[in-house]
Amino acid sequence: MSKNLLSHRLFWPFAVLVLLLVLNIFFSNNFFRITVHDGHLVGTLIDIARRSAPLILVGVGMTLVIATGGIDLSVGSVMAVSGALACLLIGDLSDPHSVAGVLGAVLLALLLCLVLGVWNGFLVSVIGIQPIVATLILMVAGRGLAQLITDGQILNVSSDPYRVIGAGYFLALPVSVLIAAAVVLIASLLTGRTALGLLLQAVGGSPAASRLAGIQARGLTWLVYVIAAVCAGIAGLIYSSNVASADSNAAGNLIELDAILAVVIGGTALTGGRFSLSGTVLGAVLIQTLNVTTVSMGIPVEATLLFKAIVVVVLCLSQSPAFRERVFSRRKPALTKEAAA
Image (cartoon, rainbow, N blue to C red):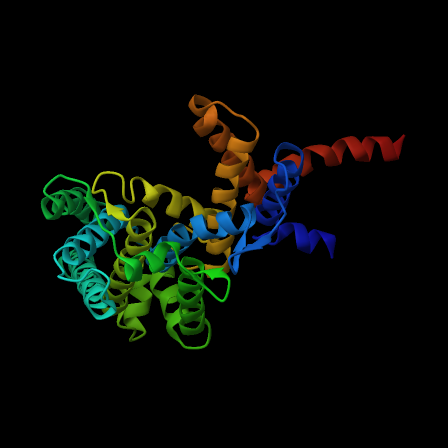
């Protein structure tokens, strides 16, 4: 039973997450304390969940893309485009506090993200460009598009309805967390309760065999890039709403790397086929908890990335069946000799 537990792909990420939480007890005062302030839940754990929401959203889309054997490096740029267009449109409204006006701006921003996802999917599934190259194009061009939208400036917005997306609360919980939870739930239902999950695994496991089996691999591949772009667009809205501005340089900067890392930590195979949405959520929360832990432990800023790299390497090694087998196999001869003596 214990051996099966140790071999579960989510055991080690969960164990590392628990370890980080325990460490914060000693380095951070009232780390587990959650209070109610003005009807809102407040605490470090709530902050971790709220800051994890954009990464969870991007991670969900990235998981589906990687499940088909692809990769999407453009999600950070799509986040920047989404926030830039939304803030530009809201700033041009005669009444920035109009719910209908803000809703229209948000929908147009997501529509543009959908078009960008269609572009990525077209390059990969129709033209046949390698995913890393196709999405690298939009990674560069998308950041430039965001700068064109903002004219290279930081657009500040003052809109109460828009601020609700990233900094608002509903039923005492952050709205951003509820949005991320809703997206995860929908994606889980679609991949777990329908044939979509099996089809994605088939396409990622063997695209040629899936085509011979009659699966529309091209359409599925196109679809996941669209989903990834829309998820990134929602994350961009949350980010820009939270800071009440659109910064085309900072928004989503390098989040694609954290998203890929969260997907890998969660047990999704980079080669395609096997994927886990719950594992991705766990990986995203782990990464954000790691960020908080480095601050609470007083680790210098210049050493933060090195500390994160060490933790990630240890975690990846612990997840590797080949590494565990090699380590334990070296112990077996020693135990055998002792037993023989």
